[in-house]
Length: 444
Image 1 (cartoon, rainbow, N blue to C red):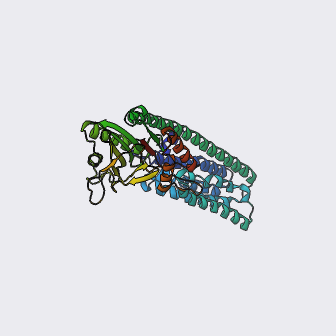
Image 2: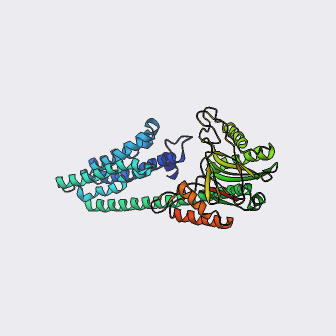
Image 3: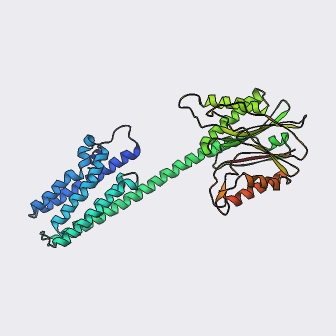
């Protein structure tokens, strides 16, 4: 019997189908097959007790309950599913009315009305058929009330109790099935989540190892800090420091996306910066960005049809020459802030990304700034200013960000890091962090 059930429940299953569709087909065929012994039982019962004509109704119900098993290879799963969701409540309506109220066949609607929830992946697809089943049940009860005829079956009470037991057993089976499915799915999802999170945590350790440590960047910029807060475990933002030809390079980079996709882009960006600066020896910020753009366009095949057209990076990059006390800056969309004597100056970046852009793409602009003692420079991505929060749930915005930096610029780098963290937490409140955050502060 088990082998036969397995054979019938897999009718219509073909190689290459996704697991959800296979499960839906098996449930449709399985529930239809479960109706077979019920129909045979009632056909034999009424036939041997002298109600052969009434028993024929159940005999006619066999092809209805097993419609998918018979015809799924001809009409397809979607048609058979819709047909069964309509025909089963209809034939049960006629059975209920034919046998009368005392037999209690309307209890069978408990079993015939709700299976559509098993056959569809979403409630929206199942709901019309469930409503149709409920309407058939209501119609059968109203019809019985209008006809008000006693059942022609002499042992109607026995049939009623039998229907009640079958309905309760079916309800218990469905509940157990759902419970087992929920538990099984929960265990599967829990294991899958653990594997995914473990993999991402490992990727996070790799990403953290690649980015410069505090001891490394403090050798170049002794009075500096990095405030880095990924939205997810891994980040699409990253920071980079390097020394080449007597110049110190610092960059705050915002890659397309966040989480795993952004982290992949950050690995590409980190690799390109190392190649351009440390291997090729380019230290002029605009030159670095120009070469970065060419490498990103080439790596992502953005000039080819179907390339990753929107992927790229926004970044702020500076190069500091200690012997000349000059900071050079170039920006891809993102600006540079520096504060001198309590006044904040913003130098805007070019309105183009490190990546392909529709229209004319010129070279990135190089800016020179003569540094004075006590100047504080800030390189950052847009995550802090774009965070929603506060009393009205609005963005923090760059105006407030500038004012806050002016207020904290005189503090030590450790204090600034702590104050940035407190300000962000206070503004964010209970809302979700919307983006990765990277802020570099350097005091000369």
